[in-house]
Image 1: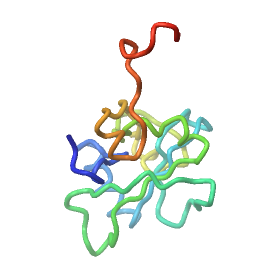
Image 2: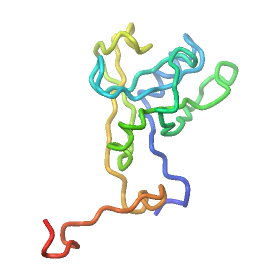
Image 3: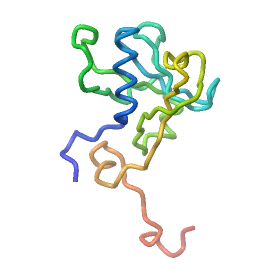
Length: 148
């Protein structure tokens, strides 16, 4: 079981963290916005802080602490946002930002390096859902017989 209030909605793989260190050295502090299907499908788009404006229609999913980021370059963890409408579909899922070879969208800072971020997901466990203040899923064996 997770310690109350500690369930993270988003994390990065070691490979993505390595690329984020290189991109931060080149561009300064970064942020992500999980794309809702425009341009490159549904990819995490990485921008220098201030280059993409979030608004009241966006949800802060959480922050990513990338080990060994230069503290001179970065004064805060990397924030990850998603549109509120899209969040309604994804709120029961943990998102893991990974990186693969290949060109993604021209808008995200890793694109010129022939790399692209992508999101892998898994459903939260019941204990993680409770920690996040969400109701756990009902297992099919637990449903009353007269319900589909």
